[in-house]
Image (cartoon, rainbow, N blue to C red):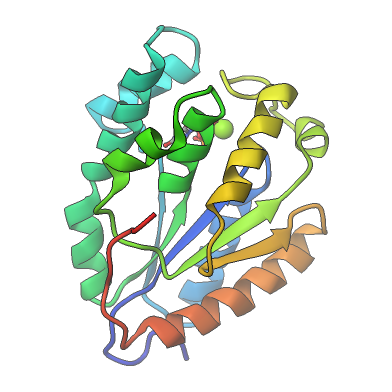
Length: 211
Ligand code: TMP
Ligand code: MG
């Protein structure tokens, strides 16, 4: 029974292109965890509920224009707004399942041509995830999914560049899951990865993201 011991919660991040299935899978994983009696919460970035998040949301909806570096720093600030809360939740034993994190920040901005090291810098000092699950879906496949094209970055050519940048960010905490498989198959794989991660993380200290 994951989470029944007194250790800290795990930070589990889902990453992937737009329409890769992250949000649906986060919700499914969360309800599974809750059903297992595990203390878990969902989260997502950008958090559009804060004033910084509202600026980001307007930009994504093409209702405002912002300089590339400016918007990059807003996305990072939007994560900084939640860092202290995230740390206290994790230390208090709550697992967090997070839909996008610093990897999105770097992959999307670097895909515009910004220097990747410059993009990483403002996110130095965030909590390092215990597990990053990358839902791997071809940009063409993602574009066939419902609701595609509504926001600024939802264009196939751009998403291909994002996928390349994601690729260069992979490290040992990443697990690549084939997001083109059925919802149920993906869900099954995520349950196993998350359950193992929660058990293994309980006694590990939190560390900071080191790119
Ligand atoms: P969402 O669809 O998951 O709400 O994300 C909105 C868009 O913002 C998506 O195209 C990815 C992009 N994004 C960034 O460019 N930088 C970031 O730091 C994050 C979290 C998302
Ligand atoms: Mg989106």
